[in-house]
Image (cartoon, rainbow, N blue to C red; front, side, top):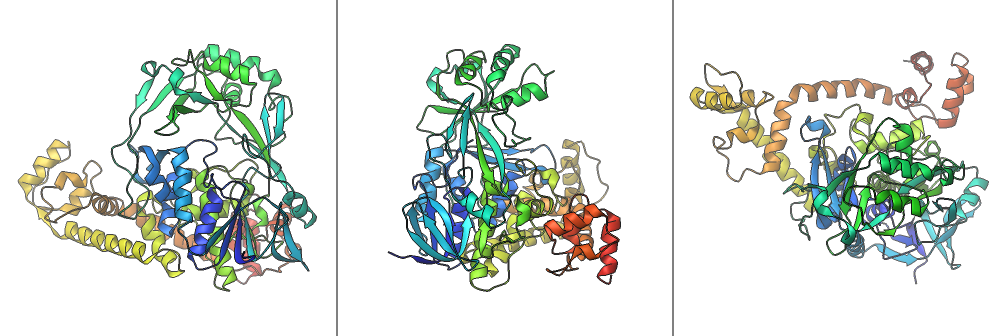
Length: 615
């Protein structure tokens, strides 16, 4: 049995799986240690991937060579492009997946990676000798040596589950928590905090009256992976919409006295943007109803997930309230909703590579960094895996900037601003949304990933072919004209102003109300792919906005080029405010650009540092 590895990944969730994929596919001998090998990439909450900004992250993971997009496409049972009525910067793909098959496909794909080994166990401590990381020690007493370790332990470290006033140890319902690592990291000087998240009750579909619910059908097409040959394994299923009412709210309020949230039993901070149903009632007390989405857990099960009804109230209160929702009058539950508290490590203790500042060769990824969501976790895991592999090989780190990827925004926000609640990605967090669209993730990232040895030759060739076809189509649209009569027929049908002479297709396409499909009978290109057509259309239609954001990004980048020495003592800059000195000493920004994004650092503080560094 092998006991020596380049990289050890602790945890088999979304972060752990992607970390293992990156490290092993970049040629590092990698060991993935997980407590349960039947639950790789387990969807412990909602069995869905993507959504607003999360869909963009998932496409970026795929463009970089991660597996989450492929697994999602193979197990999708419901797909929707959110915000399709808005501009392309807001379009966000989302897929409902078969929960059980999702984990099975993840395992199948992981087991095909030659450099990846597995061990089912729990890690209780890091192996540290002479203040250097040497590996890990498991609960079964086995020591595995490694050059780098990536911790992706999610909600398991000191996890505690709450249902009303009942609470017990657990990483997920029915699963043991993990103990030992937090205590050890505290002794090394790491800051450790507590956070909280929750999940709804799971419902028995046989007891639901679906005729009383609004049906929401899936889009016919839609995918995450840029690879052309990823085929879905399942047929589409609808989701359903219903609402709470005042009677439901009154029942839930009866349980507030036994709520771990309001009784002070839970100390961890919960997610603002995914609140429990009791939080919604308190925060939006004037609202008489809240929308709920009933989503299938898979094609071969009657289990359903009630999105929007997370709760940690007593189980009988949850059940009573559910039975007063339209369509749920006879509902049965498989298990109640619950809240879970767990340890996390404030991410300001990390570098942009996700390597810890205190202990070299140790990386953190996922919910232990204070984030919430599968996609945010997977993105961190992928980046930690990439950088651990590069570190082991003594190569240049791989860092994405804020104008290059939502992943860059995510990581920069975490390590620069820190978190005071579970962090969730939104499009509003990104300054360069028109540059970071879901459709162009491969243009932004695939070649960079290929150059570091992660994206495959197959993926790179597919990207180059798509890129070349898109450029050819854009050139065609800019050089080919359309007759006045034909153009006006199309324009009048779209209530657009007519023209007096021949027009280039690109000029007409720049009008907001005109789309490329209006010209499908006049574009003389064989086998015109829909994705190519959309990419060309967006490039032409939003050329001005794209160019403006690029110039803005370049201007801001100049501050990123001004490096702050690692050992610089900010206390020496007496012209800085006391608050600025304290925050700069704690976060230790690498560049003036990063320093400018720290909350509490003023433009005057930045000017002081610019003068100090000779600019």
